[in-house]
Amino acid sequence: MLPIPFNKPHFSRSSLFQMIRVAMSGTIAGNGIYTKKCHRFFEERFGFRKVLMTTSCTDALEMASLLCRIEPGDEVIVPSFTFMSTANAFLLRGAKILFADTLNDIPTIDPEEIERLITARTKAVVVVHYAGIACDMDPILAITRRHNLWVVEDAAHSIDSYYKGKPLGSIGHLGTFSFHETKNIISGEGGLLIVNEKNFVERSEIIWEKGTNRAAFYRGEVDKYGWVDVGSSFLPSDAVAGLLWTQLKQFDIIQQRRKKIWWRYYEQLQPLEEQGFLKRPHIPEFATVNGNLFYFTVSSHEIRDSLLNYLKHQGIQAVFHYLPLHSSAFFKDIYSGPSLPNTDRFSDCIVRLPFFYGLKSQQTRFVIRKILQFFQERGPSARLPGS
Image 1: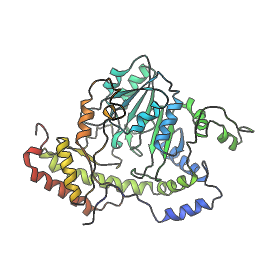
Image 2: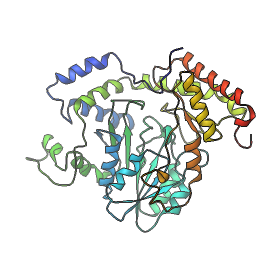
Image 3: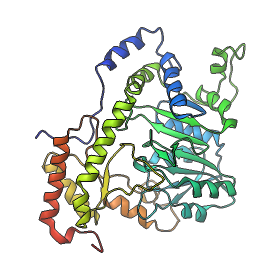
Image 4: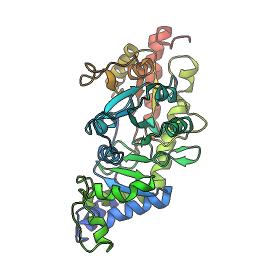
């Protein structure tokens, strides 16, 4: 068996020809033919009010911070169990970041934690749908409406995933997607801002176009364009959009295969969960699976590290995930909040398995077999507490 990488980007043969067509289209600057095609796909497929492609999900989050008019002294509530971009986007505007713990059984933000952290200075709440598993949005929205707060969905993992039938990214005032090479639909780098708040629509396009009304000018809505607001160069090259477009044309095929791989892992790990060695992802009734990544939790970071090392020596690249932001090298000296035990436990105990479009069934069986062998060798000492 050849080594099994953690990720292997999927590109069809048509991708190369698509890039040639983009190059011959007359322009590869931003907001070209293929950018518009991608925008139309997301607006029609998921019913988003307005979307704007960005160079990354990080850029989409930074646009969200600008749209929420985050200023020094404002507070923004963010889960600690997330990628640093989730916090950085608001920290760059001068916000004070308040870190929330996750739920006990799912590494998504605990609504009760949000309520606990709100003060008179709180302006926004950012939720992260980890692994495409929806946060429980109804209680979150009830809390934020009561306190008149903006809600941003960091849905980097969550394309084609749903909360009670609603596409993730469409529920808060703003949402963001990632098209990084580890995601379901990819363009190498790349992201998407989803604008659900109607009062943000016009300004979002201005911020996207470096603070100008150039997009309106190209549509013939104004006779000249100029600098009218803050902004930056958030829009990607049309070459990036062209590559994304090749993926969007295969959207259902890609999603069907990735979900099949996810459920294969889930089903084959059931015996180890029943024996108390690990815990598979918990999918609430209100959530769906979108085949973004597959993780499980083990009893401790010692077991996690031993398992990762064991798999590495078998030619399997499995990995851990986020280090808590509140205890990071950057933030630990200024963090003054309470302990976040669930965040710490997930950080210590999560194992992510190889996951990509081209992963074959014999490869997943090999991965599962090696995990089984590891726990058989370890015996009862590797079981979860209480098992």
